[in-house]
Length: 220
Ligand code: HEC
Image (cartoon, rainbow, N blue to C red; front, side, top):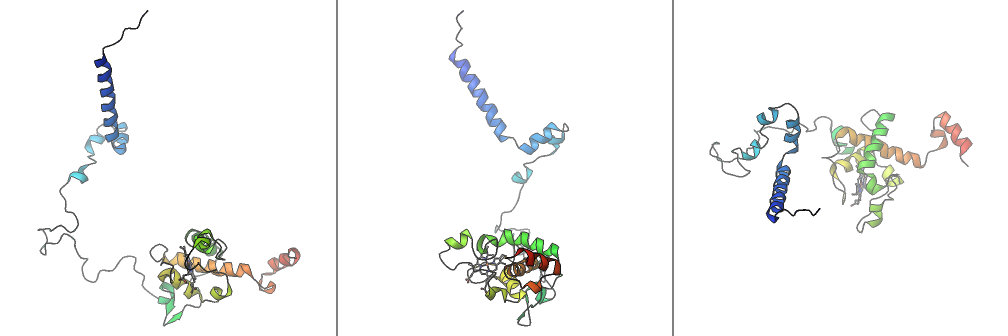
């Protein structure tokens, strides 16, 4: 039996319908679609585009509702950021009375070191190397000043507050990590940088007895 050809217009109409459905689907907000599958009526109640349509000011636009006509408001005098660090500057800045903190001002525990390792590997290792020795892909490709080794005696001799200060303020070409690494994480990183240094070269009698015995047995 011969197939009967449908008129061309029929195919065109079908294609147009498919395209229209497709476009309609593209417009649909996935959140609204998900809601529609839930409770009936919920999606109707929730107008998800109201914030786009609502009357609003844009930044820097004049605003007659304020006495000075400026839409962008200044915080009231004396306002401080809620994350402003206050208290002992040795703890918050690593420097007090012009001297770097010579001790880590938080309890140094194994958990702190593990946390420090995690944060170090996220924030510092890309440049200073996972082992802290300055061997990293970034360092090898750095055309200006290479990130220095943090385990060499020069940096290891820094008081803890000096390393902390570098994290907060940056140093030379290195940017400040103040906005990204909060206080407790900074000290954890400082502790870990110190631990990395110790892991490089430790006198046998500085080790706790069980480790010392193992080292004496296993080291050449
Ligand atoms: C994007 C690369 C990069 C990252 C990430 C980075 N540093 Fe650095 N760091 C450098 C460079 C480059 C220098 C040398 C800057 C200079 O001398 O101008 C430096 C210098 C230092 C110094 C030595 C300062 C001195 O007095 O010699 C310390 C300590 C240090 N970084 C610690 C850290 C710690 C801790 C982190 C992680 C929180 C970190 N750095 C993350 C690139 C980096």
